[in-house]
Image 1 (cartoon, rainbow, N blue to C red):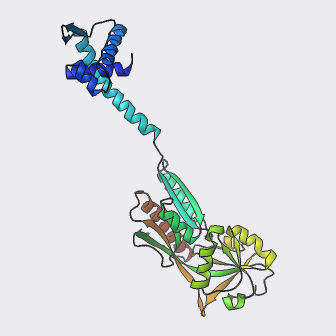
Image 2 (tube, one colour; image 1 turned 120 degrees about the horizontal axis):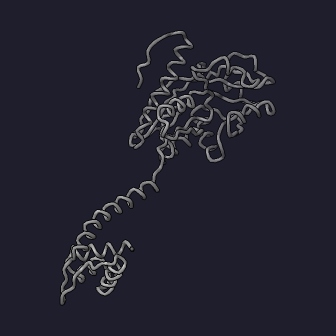
Image 3 (tube, rainbow, N blue to C red; image 1 turned 30 degrees about the vertical axis):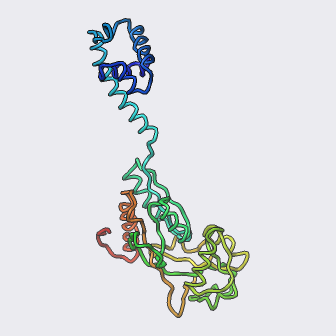
Length: 313
């Protein structure tokens, strides 16, 4: 039995006319008459009793009509839910973070969030400041972890996490390796490593030149780990923000040394935030931000030896 035959039969009964049913289904009257004849042959019963130019529905036709209506309703549901299943996309939470972030807090928060919401796919993606903002704008990331450079549009929310202290990471053979403090003036003869891929090099270079006022030599590397490995060969250095959760376990930087970086006689510090678009439809971003903030808060509290309850965002 073809579904169209059943559809045409229902239409004939509803319109009480083969002609009107044909118009409703955009086919010829002879085609709809043939479809009903084929249906009757397959069922082995007469659905209509034809009289002169009219017809009446038979007892079998009434039964088939009632059941056909129920079946049509179920088929409509079947079609709807089949499309829903086919187009279903598992909920996700995507978090972007700075390539220079030297810590585990981002992934610890992702793991904790995933345990609370096992049906949501969670993942992190590293990038530099400009790249993360662009991905957030395109809705390719739900929220990002980065510093505030004064370039956040009004439609973005931001949740403060912590202040960082900037250090120059240098190899063991670096001339100023035993210094406790160092500045750009001391480092002007040595290449500064910037973590950025080819597409982001111009933006990051602009930040170092116009924001940090440094006009020395530069070397570009894709990741912090590539930068650390290359420092021994070219006597270069890396400026790295160390977070208050930084521990002794991270001290050696694979044989590197860290020197407090100063600018205009003061320690260079930055403020880091979790940032998301106010208009984003993903309702899970704020919960992840709360988890991340609590992890930072508790680690800092433990490090400085205080016990206090976290009050959240």
